[in-house]
Amino acid sequence: MVQPLVPLRIRGAIWYQGESNVGRAAQYVGGFQRLITDLRRQWGQGAFPFYFVQLASFLPLERNDPNHSPWAELRDAQRQALALPRTGMAVATDVGNANDIHPRNKRAVGERLALHAARCRPAGAATERAGVHRAAAARRPGGAELAQRRPAHRCTGAALRGFSIADASQRFRPAQARIEGGASWSGTRR
Image (cartoon, rainbow, N blue to C red):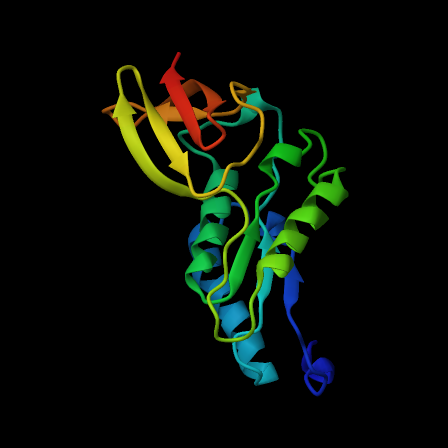
């Protein structure tokens, strides 16, 4: 379906899809990366920027099982596409809607995609990834601390919902999490 567009020059692409692939995350990992690579090959313009939205949260929090979550598995499959050059991922889990698969706050999603475009450099240059990405993790008594490359929010001490932490048995349990110092999350098991 893109063949008629191939003669046109392309400056980049944005992508928001994946809901229909929930339950097939293992296939999505390779399929999504092949899609990006194939689109770039068809246009023949090199690795043009390809930005995508990670699936927003869906379903009430109490219906999300942290030990078996097809939604989380697909979000991780999407994240793995960041291994390709000049890709960026806008995280939308905080703007999701428990009762509607499409987030109502489209502006936040669009602004996050725009951050990638604003940070993009000319072809061949390194790109700075927008969004929150874990830079380091450390165990703390009764919990863990995660440092991020870029602060997610400006509100220190804010409680975060929907976090889980695994114990030594690798079973996830609900966790209390909060932002400390604007650059790290701290979580403890309940």
